[in-house]
Amino acid sequence: MALVSTELPGLTLISKGKVRDIYSTSSPDYLLFVATDRISAYDVILKNGIPDKGKLLTQISLFWFKKLEHIIPNHFVTANVDEMPEEVGMYKAQLQDRTMLVRKAKVVQIEAIVRGYITGSAWSEYKKSGTVHGITLPAGLKESQKLPEPLFTPSTKAEQGAHDENISPEQAAKLLGEDLYTQVSQASLKLYTEAAEYALSKGLILADTKFEFGLIPSSSSPDSETLILVDEVLTPDSSRYWPLEGYEAGKSQPSFDKQYLRDWLVSAGFRKGLESGKEGEEGQGWLIDEDIVQGTRKRYEEALKMLIN
Image 1 (cartoon, helix red, strand yellow):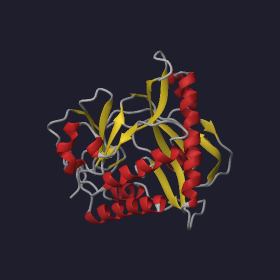
Image 2 (cartoon, rainbow, N blue to C red):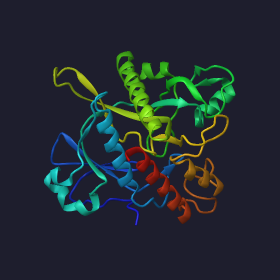
Image 3 (cartoon, rainbow, N blue to C red):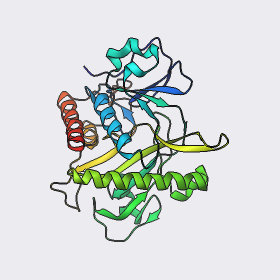
């Protein structure tokens, strides 16, 4: 059974995202991040989930938090329920392997996207204008081609149910301020570059990814703040992984991300304006066919196996 909703009556639910439920704890410094088995596509949460998806996402995030912590600190504290505040322990059966205790942080209000290959919305924009997030690129690029260098391409951070909006680096700098923008963009590019090199050594192309950042009080100066990596990191929910084997620019690529589910959703009749369900089924939501559930789960499992083994 997929866990699509958590039931923790002894804890206070702070927010319910597309995948994660976030709870406060008895400690004022920490939050509880619970990765459910919910899945979303086109910013729509599907009615049924993918069994064990939250556990797989948590394993992948834990792997990358550890591997990349030398580049920038992150919010991870522990994934061991026995080391979490006492009130969390009574829900161990529900939370085991899908929960992280994390440091509280003030979230930076942009999605920090890095693209190493041209695909998705970037390819759509490039075909129309020769740009990606307003950045002019060389003429003659093919779909899925590796870019001359990784691009930092931010977007707005939309409320649940709304759509993120691609913005230019200049707009992001204005939104965050030059200093914070520089920190975020440089950290994002360093994280992507190292992760992409490692993924390639495991037979995976990291085409693009999305990072999220937060600010915590600086240990050296109470009047300043330190940038840290938060949320999930480099999972198939936030990243586009392609198999290296068979890769060829000039066409779309098979992937270990949610594109498989997106393709099914469109074939099932989804289009803009039908976020709540098919015509005549308003409010019913979109129910994923069982074979698509299993196919999606298999892709998440394979991505984890290739990265970590």
